[in-house]
Length: 252
Image 1 (cartoon, one colour):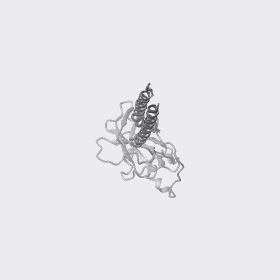
Image 2 (cartoon, rainbow, N blue to C red; image 1 turned 120 degrees about the vertical axis):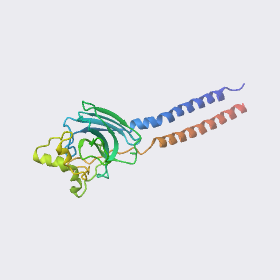
Image 3 (cartoon, rainbow, N blue to C red; image 1 turned 90 degrees about the vertical axis):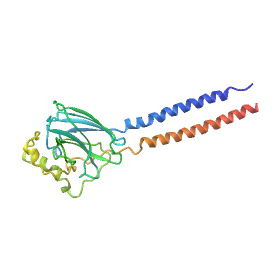
Image 4 (cartoon, helix red, strand yellow; image 1 turned 180 degrees about the vertical axis):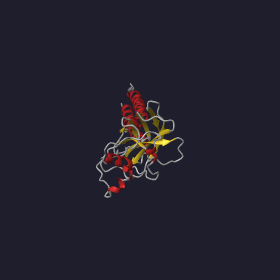
């Protein structure tokens, strides 16, 4: 009498294949959801020099997949002002990488998503929100910085030997702090236009922690390849086992 064990093994093979297929589909999604970092935004002394003290926000950033979810509150509303989000690389403090622009409603609130950004090669230190004119014909960041946030710490990094590297970022806000008149500028005010257009260095001030978010080193494609290799190894082992069982059944 022939054993039914081979048919049971065939069903087992199909079950394993289905489970691994589900894993292959879910793996990239799981990677994307698990590698995001949260950056809390506020009117940051030493960086912010325009806007409202009570302004705040939260950015959830997935640098590996290039997705950003941004929520801001209490930013000044002005039809002639739009806001732009930027990130500052940890090793290039004079560079600001644009994430996207957005407008706020009359209460100063906005909730936006940016996707398809090429940020997977970057390790970032700051996220900065600037106030840009409407229309904005200049791709460079405006000197008016409303909000800023520090990326989660990944490792301790020493400050530059030359503190002057941070001077431009502190141009207006440092002078206000010394004079005791640290009042944010309002949209369209003369003070907001006094900062030289060429002085747009967003370097980290020496009074703030030097931080950065360590990026995920594995992409969704790499996870898929690894899972596919695991599937192939599993199938080879199962097929070998089936041949052994059939060979044993044929000898009985």
